[in-house]
Length: 586
Image 1 (cartoon, rainbow, N blue to C red):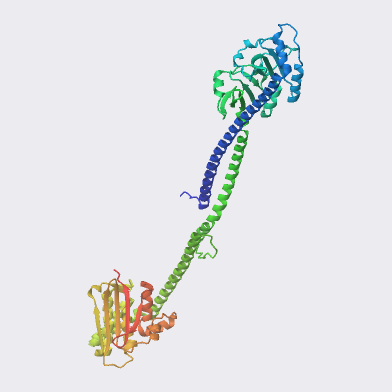
Image 2: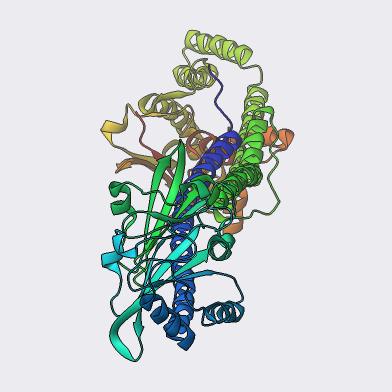
């Protein structure tokens, strides 16, 4: 037979599975929720960073816008442009200290920038001759004197002839004496270094990139200098362009890397700031949180296993101890438990176990007592027989001698006594039919009538359907013998009366024997039913009165149970009434 697992093992496995599943599920959903929060926070941070960067660029442009306006409205600038317009190309133009004005504004701003003034014909300039009116962005110039911003593809360094990288701002200058009259243009180039001061704090990793796009899709600025002046695809521009104030963020694959692309379009310059952030870098905190979550789950599972093992061991210990005690019952160790329990159910189990031990111990004691008493009763009966076989044979000899001498009355007495003796020693079952025991009772009564003649009057009422009822052998004789010996012989009456009644009531059979003898006091009644353990004294008593009331009372309890036995009381005839009720058995 396959050995079943212990309750400790079952509890450890059960508790461990429950705790592991609970911790795993809660950790999984906690990580899912936390990762979602981290990603949302990261996206929000990226958008806010882009918006802040766009705001800083706008403030920088506004600062240069105000600075260029002061230069444009300066008296020397106005006179200088008017002088340019009056001269022919190639003629010398008076300086009017314009460079000092520009230097003064540079000192005020704290950084160097390039300013080029061009006449109203759109031609001239010391850096490179060009015609503004031929530029594709010329129609976008603000005729009200506002600044138009674009990437610089006009001004070159005089010495190196290299394009000066930076933002190009173009302003149409009006004559402040005649506001409707155009006197020239001012070109302002913001150097790349100024933009890098704005963007630099955002770049925490070289893999990140920042671009500034104008409304036409040209790259005005990029942390990758090789991209300056290039244009982007219209599809990409549509994707990143956002006219709202919330910005835009998406995840794209670029050169085999997953990137977060955040963008924001300024309402002031209509430029779009675009940032490219490596996803792995953006979610580095999420990875750390994932590793921490896995570590916490592992530690939680380990702690759960220890907790489940300890809790299962402590919870199952009383049950395992009870199982051990139950197994000890097979070896006869009837020892009750006297310790304390921690919960109600275990207390009930141990209380039941202790009660079972007490009941079992009492049952063993009672059975042992019954076995001892049965052996004692058998020994008493054997001592009371006085060599019955020899006596039985001797009575038969006397009987045949009385017949031969024609002493019939004596022969009948010997025959009745011989039948009684034969009935008492005959082997076989201890149970006989009621009619057989009544037959032997009649033999005993006949012997007594030979002695007392008509003075002894016995009435017997027996229900006919009870004649086949099984009873113990010599069941009635001790009752009649006790009535004659102890109740009638010691008093003088004209008639000695004994009434015998055997009736059935429901599932019980009632035996009543009462006489008109001297009766018994309450104390005598109580002493008469006490079973004497002294075999010698019991033998002495049986020599006079058969097996006796106490012996019969004890035999009834042994066979039918402690609830049954003889009941002694005063009889309505004036003597003793003996009543016995036993269950009706087939």
